[in-house]
Image (cartoon, rainbow, N blue to C red; front, side, top):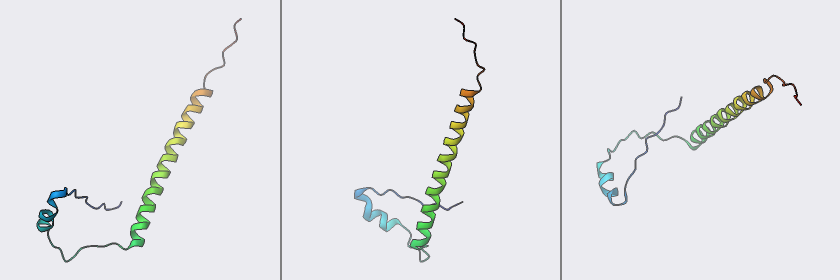
Length: 76
């Protein structure tokens, strides 16, 4: 669906070493702020939709389980 960027963890003391070891690429792809914002909104919207669908399924199964039981006769 979407391409995810790589996350690189740099420890405090190794910043100079990591900067020297990183390849200098002339073709660094930068996304515009609008495109990045659109992707974030899309991602969060998908999360919300998945959450709502999961809740609906859970609620439906709980209601069906509650009402599917056969009524029992009262024995005194």
